[in-house]
Length: 524
Image (cartoon, rainbow, N blue to C red; front, side, top):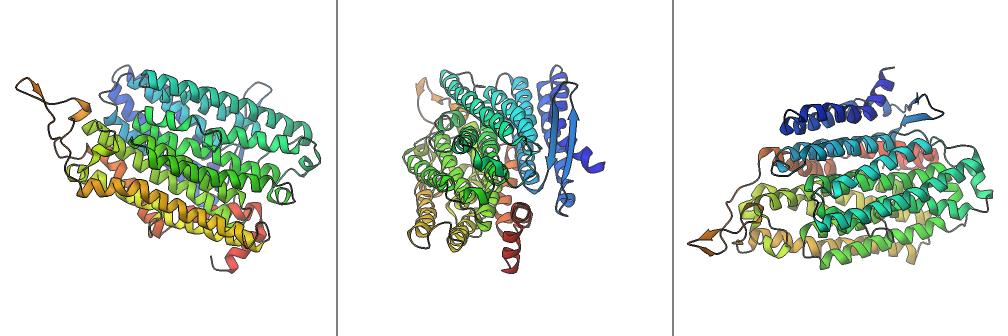
């Protein structure tokens, strides 16, 4: 009963928080922001209490009767717990950050409420027990997150929001079609199994599979349905950007993992349909395309957005390898990328908040004025490049081992295919260095920029506009603390990855015990 209560609260607390925050915000918007952070922190604590239960190999399931002919099914296993832990952690830190960041903004109450609504949808997705419940919460999260994208209400934000909403609706309809087809053919919508074998006899096998991938891939920002992402992430307030890139696109990756390993099953997809290999190719294209465009970007948040497309490619690549280490690499990269990209977007937001600077060329010398912020930025960027001992190195190394593992099992060739995957990982790290390296170097060794003052206004002297130096200081501790915590996590989990690695291995054990015992016997 205790575990089921924790599971129910993990989903319901954000929804309860909407009511509490709305009531409190009528008295004070700042109180509403503080309560938003407290609700997210309480949810994180609730989810953390599930960890010792799930690591014992247990799975918790509950069903909620709505009074309608609809039963909502919830379930938490190792994969769901890792995604819930990741989501609640980033949401908590972003909400603490937003207390100060959103102070000069308008419609703060609206931002907090729709942030909690989106959090409610996200937690419902990762703690769902069947495809129908997943779809309901997927639509809640996708549609209500639109309000975070358009919060600034600029023309650019409205256009990006419209593109996001259009893609989300199309993706949702395609996903619904796949879910209905799955139920008609199999009579089952559960996510506890290891593949619904009867799908292989359907003449609509490929259509159903790619409908799932399209529906979830839109949210994941996977090529070729990534077009909304580089427009939506930069225009949102920086706490929302951290949530969109650090958490919400991971929901799409979560859906793809469930599609491949629960709905269809690795055995079915490795029997010559070619679907997993095409998915692998899409992952590789996402990596190269995202990194290549990021190199050309001049605005810091757009660069980070394209980098997110590349990193989702890593996750798709690991999923499609159909090997133990490949799947582990994909799962731990979901967690590590949330830490890295959450830190980078919050750092970018701090720079914009204090200086108004967005163009990369204008960030020369910024490390001398905001040393703690840029030190954290450099830690996260070094991890994105793949330097040891940071977390990004561990996930990329695991993905490379996954390619070798997949080749040994005969899924991909021992020759060019394996070399191509490992070469892609190396090339992407070099491309990461090309677009992150200059930012880090200029921040510490470039001449200090005499640019805009806080929030982008120019200083004036004697009636003549001229550029003035920005005061040298890091942001308020409410903004700085989440940044430091995320940067510390990038280093600590890179050295001590027991939590994400352990949950990833339990996921492997669930979907293929033989894989699990293989990696245990190898001491990996």
